[in-house]
Structure formats: structure tokens, C-alpha cells
Amino acid sequence: MSVHTWLTDTPLEVADVLARVGTHEDGAVALFLGTVRRSNAGRDVVGMRYDAYLPMAERVLAAIAAEALERMGEGSVAAAHRVGEVPLGGASVAIAVASPHRAEAFDACRYVIEEIKVRLPVWKLERYTDGTEAWLGGAPPPAPEPAETAS
Image 1 (spheres, rainbow, N blue to C red):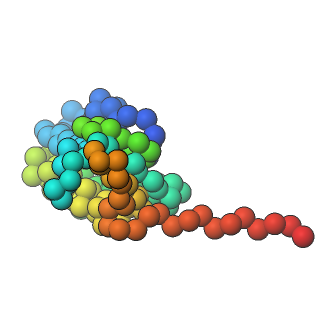
Image 2 (image 1 turned 120 degrees about the horizontal axis):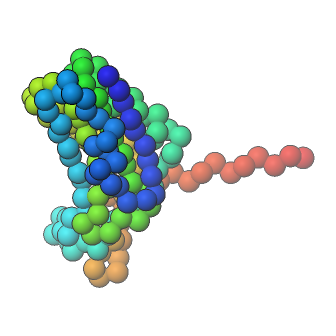
């Protein structure tokens, strides 16, 4: 049983995610890719920017994947999320789950993506063809705390 998670500012490679799951004991590997789609809420999209509070996001993503593995009871889970600019059609999240059985692999994959949507501290700035942009959910990421100065 294993869990592999990471956030990256480079394009997600399916082969990298798949290489981290699966053994000869597994009869199923489920793969989910979340991609930037052309249209959202009736607006034409040209790309997205993902911002994250990295230390927390890394911990939360690892916890989500570990929970999925615990629910599954055996197998392995890998999950990666992009930060930074992602073009139209680009993958923003990749999840691979290996299990002896397909139902558990599909269930674990769904669990990971649904929990990411709710819990992962990642903010999405959607960019539109008309030159405007909007934070999904209406809120930008919180501003960093100012550093204290020595006196």
C-alpha cells in the first residue's frame, strides 16, 4: 500500500502519475484527469491560474489520498495538482488509484477528487476570451501575512 502526492508548476504527465501506483496484485487502475474546459457558466475560457498555500495544500492532499487508501483497504493512490498557469485543455489534477478490484479503484478515485474540491486550499482564477478574469467561488486567495520587522 502506498500514497504519493505532489503539487507542481509544471505540466502533469499521466505516465508519472501512473508509474506510482499498481503491482502485480492489482487488477484495476483508475485514472482521473481534471482539465481546463473551454466554457464555464456560459463564458468562453482561455485558461486558468491555480494558486495554493503550498505547505497546507501538500498536507491536505496527502491526507485525502491516505483516507482514500484507508477506505479501500489495499492498493495505492497517487494524486498531483497543478499550480500556476494552465492552458485550455491542460490537466490541472491527475489521480491514479490501483486496487485488486475495479469498484474500489473507481470509488477511491471519486473520493479523492470530491475531497480535493471541498478541502484543498487551491484558488482558481479563470481567464476569459474577452480579456476579463474571475476567481471561482468569488474570493481570491488570502494575502500573505506581512513579515515582522526587528526593532
